[in-house]
Length: 385
Image (cartoon, rainbow, N blue to C red; front, side, top):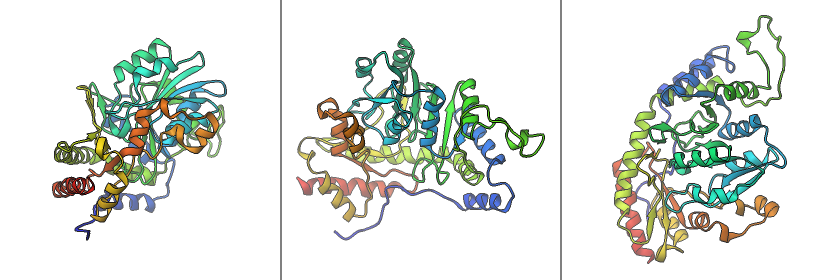
């Protein structure tokens, strides 16, 4: 088919205001360790309704690593993790020397199946590392009750969950830490970067030092320039002021971004909901607020083996798609070779990996784009059956 238009799956929404703000930082003398990061952190906490402490970092993975680094977990420890997630969720555990213990996901949301967690807890379990899959919040009341019962820490991977809330509370503020990503096609971007969030001041103090080599004094706190001490082990996970000023501009548009995504998601969902053998991942709890990162459909029944054909025809129609995620993490070669893999333990993760298609709903798209995607999807389904 001849392409009527080109609809990319994701595109960063960068305005002239964003570009000018970055240029102003570049005109100055301070490109890192400056005021932009501090302001960005304060404004991000404000976006989360002023709760918790926000610490800017170089990526979402950096925030995840710092979460376990400050806990001090290591060899002999175990962390419960979802089988269905980006590999960063699990790498952050693995790089610390601890062992990830995989749990299958729910088929309706893609989130970790809380009802399976308890059977995977052992005397070696130190934490639960969860992901709010595609911005769909986990059922945090039930999960925190379980973590409290066994005195486990909770790390929330919020990479796709800016704007997601459970019972009115922003995700990332329930557990020990929340880890956000500002990759270019996320809800907002800093080019590359992330935010470590915690409701615990003692954790914030440790991570504030750990992200910058463990140095005990910032530039502004040094009475003698260049004089400082290192009282703890640290890393270099700082965000630059260039990234931070872009983030500040983007954050000011977050409510507009959120509303555009929500409108696009709900309209496209209404167009696709009548298709037989198609399941749409979405929040299914009355207290959960989705962040609408994308609309992921799971192909069932007669459509189950038609994904490649559907994706090819969507591409020919100019519609960009993606897959979240291409493998359950325990099926990736590294983890399969190290820990073994039994597909029967993760049936829902396998189904979502092998039979889902992620469709775009970003703020770069309008209602007529959703109309086009919905109409073409319906027609293509008829063509492949």
